[in-house]
Length: 332
Image (cartoon, rainbow, N blue to C red; front, side):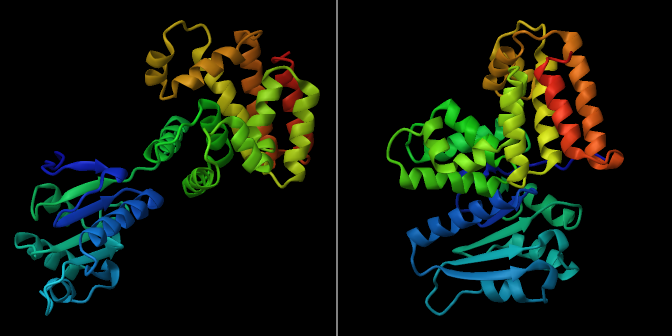
């Protein structure tokens, strides 16, 4: 089946603007919430008398949308926020499609759809141009390069300078939770008036950064066996889970294997591999003293360790320490 034609603007979460219908799609709830909040603040700034109403599409009763969109006594502008559109009732689909033919004046309807096929007929109608809407796409940020770009935009929006080292430290420490990453950026912006550097991040989040799995991996890859083992034990004693520790090693060794023997410019190679240019540069630095056989041995060691900590072994700490030792010896 051919894809439905998209005739409306599709914008990033930080490019939201008023429209009669604003469709907010995608699985990244944090970005969706931020886009919806930004639109509310924008409309409220334009007219403080803005009326705000909330609907749950999965609990929708016939007539609710039309009732809320009807002109009030003093004709205040209205913002209607609708959640759970991916679980909406049949009545909601029917009545919202009918509403798109004649959207109410001075009314803004936000439809939050987190994903799935439910409500496809409605989404197709909006994307086809009915109602004069726009779509805000909130895709999950999976790659470190995407999270780095997000963190960089937090500082750029505030007109503040941030170093690449600071961004790497932030993403390394908070890559598992976008909301936490954003909160960390905002705290740095609020509490520190100078350029944000790696030292700044270390000062604020030293515990989070020092025990981070990537710190252990960096020391091991550089051949600093003792330091890597100390960092590993500190991380484990601080409550770190063995699984993400192994994942950090796998990520860095995998990147090194991908770029081993390549001479293409960092930007060109980064685009091809879905990485940030700084990751290519860092990987090339990490590769000094390594060879392909050693990389292969380490990949096998990481796979074996992963199996051990997920049930095949009895002592996950021993398995992790053995992996660190193998990698610090560059696979030999």
